[in-house]
Length: 169
Image 1 (cartoon, rainbow, N blue to C red):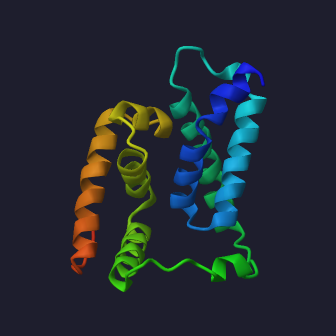
Image 2: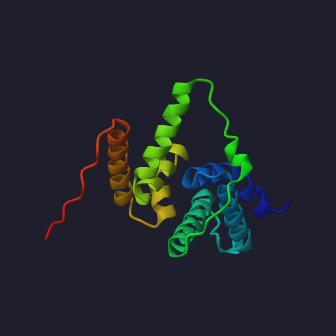
């Protein structure tokens, strides 16, 4: 096992978790992780030693996901149901399962920019600087998106409607 394999391999669980939270489908998440790893190993020579490898890998995944979303919007494809997806494990208590479903639905209602920041900060426990590097935005933008995303998530989970944006001329 060479150095690239060893360094990248330790980040695979985090990549899988983030991919699953982005696309919500096991098969698509696995494909996203595989595409990320393929690109990372193929371009490992471009990674700057001493920089944050996790942020570099997440930036690769973010870019691949963004490209996939753009491609899906241009030509939406229908996929047959995967029988594995029909056998979703049920949590021990009904209420917990409903809360998880409601949280997933609420996250899906958020704008992509806010959802990405919430997942990277909340789920992946990345620092604002790391998230800014992954998404190629300033730290202030990360903080703003995180704040707005948390507030929108609170409103959605409380059953309140999110006010429409006003057009300012």
